[in-house]
Image (cartoon, rainbow, N blue to C red):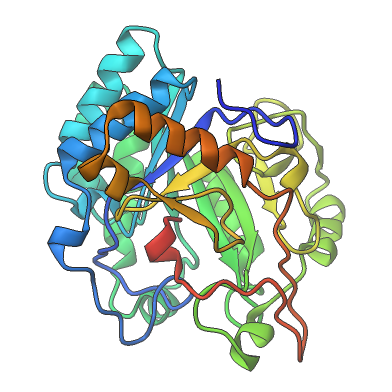
Length: 329
């Protein structure tokens, strides 16, 4: 069992399987993004080996991320392996976060391999806005993929990064669409990660203000519903769509953190909002299994109590100089 210095049980691993993506969302990657050489990225076999070791250490919840996980060649081998662990009752759940562009192709394969819940990143229902924020995305492909999952009884949660002067005015339309589809949604604050400066400040919209609107305008109440992530949920009844808030800056949730993040290059980040990491790729390629376990156990001792995110006109405290596609969304 993995326990950090603040007595938090770490039972959830987010695994970034690639830094590559078929979209170019502006808050996720650099404008002039350069993807990693393939030799720097963990092989499928190495990813599976690390998942196995984390599982032996008590991790029972896994989420595949990217980049876009469904563009990784042979990614189904990882999903099949996770499903085999699930069938042996060694893990509780394996899920993934996707941009949805390939879901029509993969929905049935995911369902057949034990994926019962996914997150889909979707920041606008307006085709022109969607194309603008993703650089070239086709929103209809994403909607078709979501509907493919719904037909197969895969639970879909939409992740929407709330951006001032971009999608803040349509967010209630997005929520109503989500409710109509009987999906859930998490509304996410912009964080000081990657490209930064006045543009990031201008994007930021505090969830405190928006949370009040949720309660008053949609007549919602706080829900006891929980997932593996940090969302605080609201709903009208237990049977309706859950509307979640991820407020990394305005409402710090670090005291209940149960997760660590493995990048596609084998760096184990103990916190999305801190720069410390342990290089598991080096350990994997040069050390024994016992040494790898020691490295993971050491990582728990340096997991920070919290991040230090702050966004204001002249202050970007806690700024992390890496993009989300590097760490894993």
